Amino acid sequence: MTNGSTSRAFPDWFVACCPPPDATAAACEVYRFVEKNPIDPAEFRTYHETGERPNANSCQRCGLSVFLSVDDVRTFLSHLWQNYPGKNYGPHIFKRNLTANDGKIKSTGNHGHHTWWAFEGTERHASFVFVETVPRN
Image (cartoon, rainbow, N blue to C red; front, side):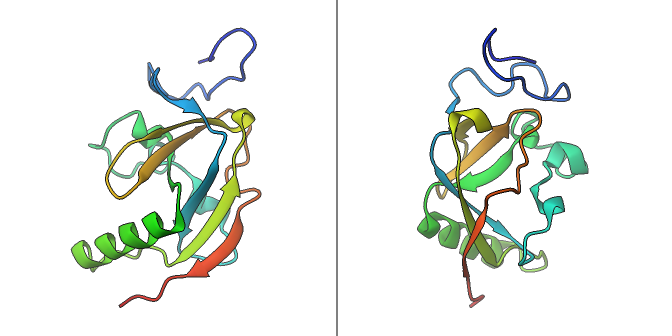
């Protein structure tokens, strides 16, 4: 699927109309929590690629969860840890400066959650730098 004649293409496995038309160029700093430090590229696979959360929004499953502030990541991690104590989320926060050449982004949930849809060939894990480890309270 392409985003116009001069734009980069999204992967063929993206569902129809994904990313949504109101998604904007991913020209911003984003934060993401991961389990491993140093980064494991496998943690930058989408739910679509891993087969997880099959009943979730099909377009959002083609993108990655990111946040626009470190405070939003902390809040979201706290929410996850309180509501899903048996799951292993975080605790490491990394950040990356995305450019319009990295894909599209849109606010898609609570606690500052955004979805980033990366263009085909974008190394999603690349250029992320460590910010902090959030202590689990």
